[in-house]
Image (cartoon, rainbow, N blue to C red; front, side, top):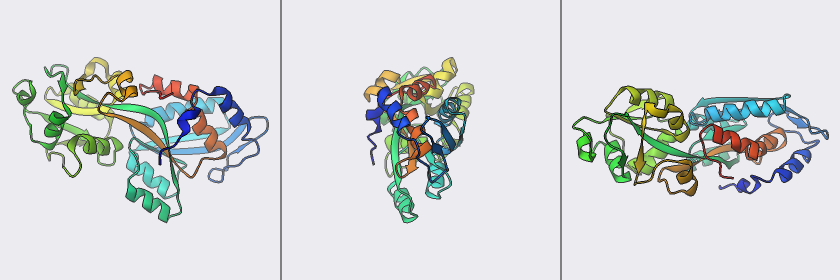
Amino acid sequence: MRDRRWSAIGLSAALAMALVGLGGCSDSTTGGTTDPGGGLSGSVTVEGSDTMVNLGQAWAEAFSEEHPNVMVSVKGGGSGNGIAALINGTIDFANASREMKSEEIQLAESKGIKPIETAVALDGITVVVNPSNGVSGLTLDQLGKIYRGEVANWKDVGGADKGIVLLGRDTSSGTYEYFKEEVVGKGAEHSKSMRNLPSNQAITEEVKGNDGAIGYIGIGYAEKAGAAVKLLSVDGVEPTAESVLSGEYPLSRELHMYSNGEPEGVLKAYIDWILSPAGQAIAEEQGFVNRG
């Protein structure tokens, strides 16, 4: 289901022509319209990934400033909830920090929904600990053992003789799903001692106040946290925009927006704008990585 929209990024002239070419089109989902003069009107509804919610809101505000007759609403709730809303036909775009599962695609198609995936930015899952923690890096193998509960004391991975406090995201989160597959392992289970927290911010606050804690958050949230948390290297690679873009950082991932079929009308204008230099600049401002 890979989308080839990335070829459009950076082609400002082509984007401008595309927007003009939308004249007279209408959007069957939202009733959005465009006119030969280049004006847009209508509404766009987005729901899903909590990792993407601040980014989505920043995109929505900037787009609406350029097109005041378009209302863009963005809600969080987790990737799974956003995908479910798309399947139920109640939103235009589902934000997801993971790919749709095969069973979700099958359910969507059974309801006449054709999910189309567009990669809109890159993210790196950063592993964070309290600044007082003496550990500066872990391997993927060590992380897996920690989150499966096979390693429960920091001294076993080069740290102090202190119990490890496991923090993870809630099960509706795309970040939870991604981390489980890439770190905990397919078919394996998290340690029963892990606390499931509802957001990146909740994990940040807990790590900040608990010198035995370990958690994982999006790179944008980690950068905003600053000195409140310590970022660990993974397999010797630091989580940076450069290592995420190159794919060298082991926990790099794409962020997606899913639509029902190829976007048309105001929906196409919105997704094209997100992939434009203007939209990608906002992704960078929010701490994510521009693939353009």
